[in-house]
Amino acid sequence: MKKTNLLLCTLFLVFILTSCSPRITTTVFKQYPPVDKTAPVRVFEYGEQAPESSEVLGMVAITDKGFTTKCDYESVKGFAMEETRRMGGNAFQVTDHRLPNFWGSTCHEIAGTALRILLEDSTLNQKPPFKIEDGYRQAYGVRRRLYQTSPFDFTLNVGYGVIYNRTKGLDRSEKRAERELSNGLTWDATFHQYFKNNMGWGIQYSGYNSSTTFSGFDHNVLLTYIAPQYSLKAVWEKWEMKYELGVGYMRYYNKVTAPQGFAAVYGNTIAANMTLGFEYKLSKHFGLGVDLGLVGGSFGKLKYKNLIPERELGEDERMGVERVNFTLGFRYYIGRKK
Image (cartoon, rainbow, N blue to C red; front, side, top):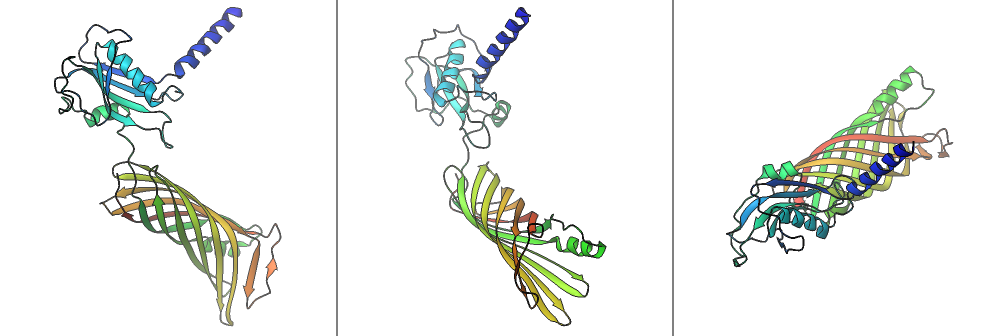
C-alpha cells in the first residue's frame, strides 16, 4: 500500500511539474553539435529580418498544453532559444506570434526558425532566406497576431422570433392563439464602437411582431426593446465572431380590434439580451452576418385602454416574455481594420 501511494504521489508530482511548461514541437532539417547552455542566441522578432546568409536548421513551435503557466513572452522565447542551442544554432527568427486572448489561450504562443549565422555576418537588413507557408502555421496551431476589427460598425438584421413562455390552465383554442402570438417577425439595428482589444460598446434597438384572431378579436402584438451593449469580438482575416450582452427598456403593446371598436393592453419593464453572431466581410466596408439571440423580461403591471383600469399582476400572473431570435443581416464597417 505504501509503495502504491508513493507511486501515485510521484505521478501526480510529475503531472504538476510537466503541465506548467508549454508544448514544444521541433522539426530538424540539419543538426550541428549542441552549443553550451549559456551561449548567446540572437532573437529576431516578428517583422525583423535575419541575415541573407543564415542557414536554416529547423523549425520550433511553443504552444499551450491547456495547463501551462510558464508562458509569458520572455519564457516562451527562452524555450525556443534552448531548442535552437540543441540544434547547434545561434539565432532564432520569430515568424508567428499569437497573443493571449479571451477566446483562446492565456499564453503567448510562437513559432519560428532556428538559424546558424556566421559571427562575422552583420548584414541584418537583408531579405530573410526562408518563407513560412500557411500549412506550417496551421500544423503547429500558431497564428500570426490577432486581427483588429473595424473601429465602428452598423448592423441591420431581420429574421424569425419565438417566445417560449407558456401560460398554464388554457383551453385548446386559447393555447392555439398563444402559439400564434409566440411566433413572429423580429428585427434589430445596432451601432458599435470597438477598441484595440476588440472589446466595445453599442446601442441596440430591436422589435418583434405577431398577430392572431381569437373569439372574434384581432390581436396584434408589438414588442420593442432598446439597450446599451457590451460587445466582444474574435477576428480573423474575413471572419468575425461576436458576443454581446445588454440590459435596457422593453415595451409590450397588444392592439385588440373588434367590430365594437379598438382596445389595447400595454406595459413597460426592464429586460436583458444576449447575442452570439458570425460575420463574413465581403469588402472593406460591407459584410453579411447571422445572429442567434435571446431577449426577455417580465411584466408585473399592465395598462388597459378602453378596457378595465390598470392593475398590478400577482406573482403567479406576471407575464414573462423571453424570446429566441434567429436573424440574418447586413453589416457596414467604418474605419480601417488591421
